[in-house]
Image 1 (tube, rainbow, N blue to C red):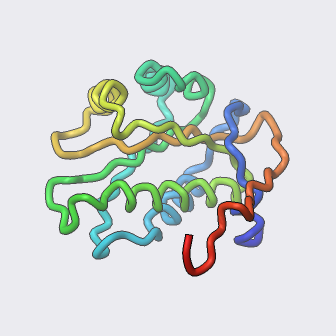
Image 2: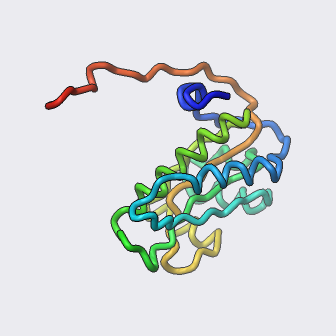
Length: 169
């Protein structure tokens, strides 16, 4: 799949088949995520790849929007190790870039995913931190529910020329 096709064709997929995601695909997704740019090249990201069904169920309970984790064969939690940052206010941007890279790679592999936001909603962050056993100073940014799509969605053209400003607002 061409890069622009992967970017423009990606949609949030919330329904999956029971087919597992291969280890090779998980590896490719994580390679793509870690190819993201980061402030000062600090690369604060860490990832928790979850395939255990009971653990996915526990993760689903940490957010009111996590129902799809109950059928997804894979969840990838994007975390930041904030204990030794060079640019302490930039980790959210770094993790956002890694997340977008992962989402595009997932689509390019023929898989589907949806981004479940956690940070900075502490009522979600703390329960997820506990379920995953994250050490102090490691912040869960988001969770990607990933699987083979059991639904199709046409690409959405979200371009809006009214939101483009040239030289000045």
